[in-house]
Image 1 (cartoon, helix red, strand yellow):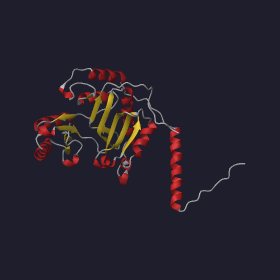
Image 2 (cartoon, helix red, strand yellow):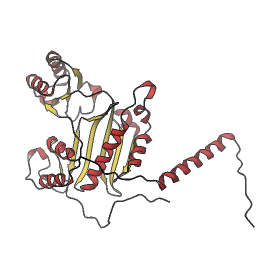
Image 3 (cartoon, helix red, strand yellow):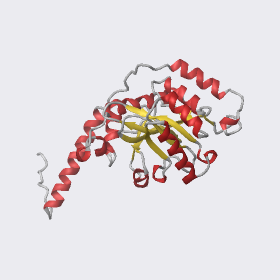
Length: 302
């Protein structure tokens, strides 16, 4: 005889609603596990060229710009030009930032890039801290640039300490951060969050294993608590999440194809209503560790 069926009973309506919500979340998790998505083929990818560049950089003689006295056990952080070249092999352009050690050099850099421009400090203690006044935007003329340069150096210190750069302005949008790094337990991990202190303090970052699928990166950008800012929060214009998803897939593919890449950081990535712009990038290389397992690592599904 079939087992008798029992009707669940709850002491309060709130608990019944909570139980129903958990059941819905479990069904959604089962659906997603059954449809994990796919790792799409991307255009403008030069895997062989990237491999040759990585090999050359890892075996190049030690230079002062590497900052580590050679590759060694912990690898090297690439110079900006080398990092930008490597990322470009996977269709990830980085907007150039020209050094501006004095006001005249800044003016020449702006003439080369085209107005309007931004003037930024890149010193480690000021990097990604616009609240300290180290970033001046929408400088449309030489006079504005010279004034901003004087104000910056008068307020924050000498140019040698600030390491200022000039960069062309990009369309306004939402500042985000894309990273990838090697976790000893699970391998390469792709991370995403919004730029700025609130997200960092709240730990509002989403992670996925590499290689990530199209469905996984779509869920990744929607899973952070600050995701509404990407989709038109309080009447703002929604940004180009399709371009953001493609960028995440490109970073995932780059790291998956080349185990020598142990860390990638793109910050900030300004996602506008149409397209996006990568304004800063770091890449770290190291000889790949020996692996006894085969194929990509995956979290188990039950």
